[in-house]
Image (cartoon, rainbow, N blue to C red; front, side):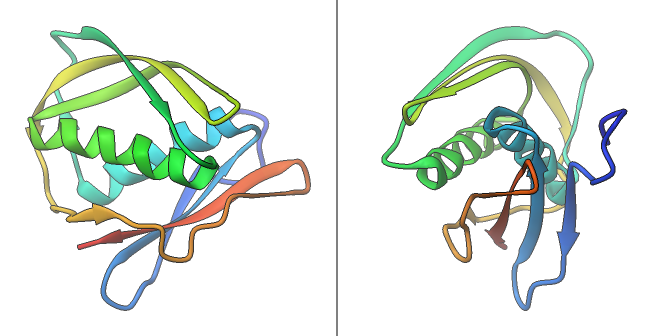
Length: 138
């Protein structure tokens, strides 16, 4: 949780057959970063501290929801290659995402997910905070 925030970065919520999160952010980049942290939480992914390999992610999508699914899917793809990412900087403008990341080797993954879904996802702003629900297919 951020130092001056009264809301969590994300919270896991019950879902019938899958896993789900409610994610919060003061802006869209923070929402996306918290979504990534939440996905890693659900997966129970643990990465090494070193070596850190710098890289970038550049994505374009039709809308913010598609951009978020694409971003999380890209991170999931890297996790399948035994790489965990740490987002250093993330910018979103006009449905374009650019992120500077560090990749580190994964030491373990506790739970496999099959996919990030659009199911029940809608990014909205309420009381100066962006939020969305994300459902992961297990």
